[in-house]
Image (cartoon, rainbow, N blue to C red; front, side, top):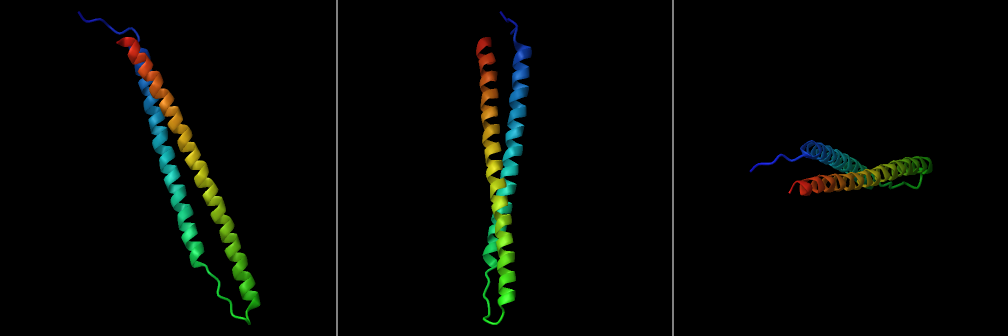
Length: 111
C-alpha cells in the first residue's frame, strides 16, 4: 500500500533551501581562498622589499622605508579581509547546517 507524503512540497522547498545554502558555502570558501592567497602574495612581496641602505643615501633610505611601511599597511588590510572572509565562510556553514537540519526534520516526519 503506497501512501502519498503530504509534506512533499515542504520537503522540496527545504531541499532547495539546503542547496542554496550549500552554494553560498562554496562561494564563501572560494572568496576566502582568494583573499588568503592575495594576503600571502603581499606577505611574500613585503619580505622581498628589504632595505639595505648605504650611509650616504639617507633620503633614499627614508623613502624606501616609507614605501615599505605603506606596503605593510596594505598587507594588514589584506589580512583583515581574509579574516572577514573566513568569518563569512563560517557563517554560511552555520546556515547550511541549519538548512540541513530543517530538511531532515521534514524527512523524519515522512517516515
